[in-house]
Image 1 (cartoon, rainbow, N blue to C red):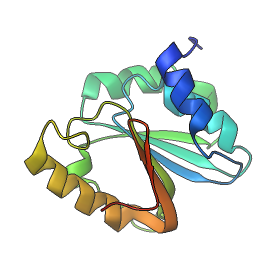
Image 2 (cartoon, rainbow, N blue to C red):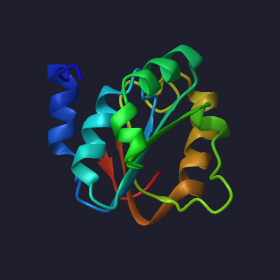
Image 3 (cartoon, rainbow, N blue to C red):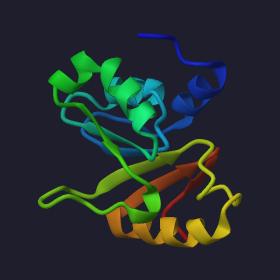
Length: 139
């Protein structure tokens, strides 16, 4: 597994990760941060990496065989603006997004829909971390 960039390592180190958490990473790209978070929520936790790019998801899956086989990591292609929980899927304790245009103000209209999706999939008392901003819940 490739080492995390300095920036992603600094993000990882401030996240309130602990065993058993369910984490959604929005804009997971090739999965480096998702893999690192999965190691910190084990045992009993799970990280779902979400990205709108089919290429990014393919790279993430290709680099995550061991974590996926253990059940602590999975990936899904899609946009946060359209994201819904799968049937029987539990909400997330932590939602993490690093450099996601729909959440950092670059795409305000998409952001409105994205925050609605986040509200719908965040567990009661869950936290959202967007580019260094930790919140109790979406605004």
